[in-house]
Length: 361
Image 1: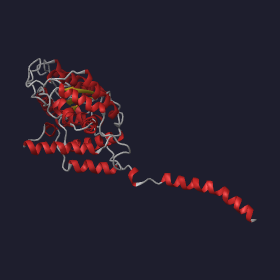
Image 2 (image 1 turned 135 degrees about the vertical axis):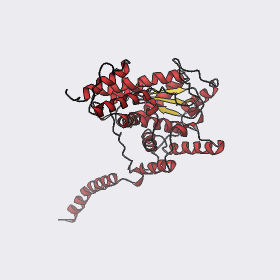
Image 3 (image 1 turned 90 degrees about the horizontal axis):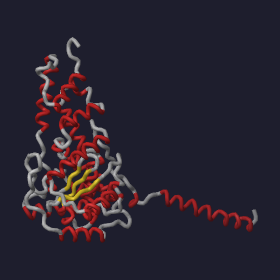
Image 4 (image 1 turned 180 degrees about the vertical axis):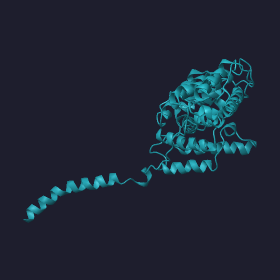
């Protein structure tokens, strides 16, 4: 090969070599782009996602009767705009998320199955920036996405249900009978009692959600630090911690997840003009009422910021379950004298007869 031909061949190789080097650089991620996020999945559940939605709608209606809602279209509109941006990054079932503002300055929020999320006015007033508010809302959105409420309800039901019923509860009709018997809102006593494991999972997934939404994920930890400082100052835990049991090393675990995500995203957001305007607007509104009137139909009204006081229908359900269990052990089928007169309890007897093989049948 002549010297002229060699130079021509080398000239043709240069673009190809440069292209190969460029591909190699793209294919090798830097330390800041590695995403080793914690993988989370919903736990075992008797309920279907559709039933989560139905139960949540029923429960939300009852909750609004017992809570003092702000009922401000501007505030609820802002919460839903922000919430829907966050929820678009929530994994799993695409629930119809809806965010509502409760008119109390207690720093708290709670979520119902299927996507109904209640945010106290105090969260908006207490957050330093939009990223911190997004952290709280991402945490509650994670409870819905991971189906923590109905997972808790499922475990509580199985712990009480007689063996005669277990064969039937897996079908849609049987689960519908459970909802009908216990009552959607009566289940809230279970739906809103999360374990520390569930709280930790909501922290982790919430951190991922606000990261994917373009916010500084460290805001989740910063808000918890703010609450802990308030606890030290006042000598009592904030309302948020009373209803959200705090896992060990909560702040450290959130920061660990931030590291797994590779740090804050590029060009991350911390605040917005919309948040500053809505916070100023909320703080200008009349002070929340100091007392809550008892809900229609009787029962004790919750104090400001507390989750609703719930009916005690579950205790009657437990007694009905125990009667089924006794019948199952003795082998005596329910006769007319033993059948409950209440239509609600009758649903349990009907299901018990359908799922139990009585002697001589």
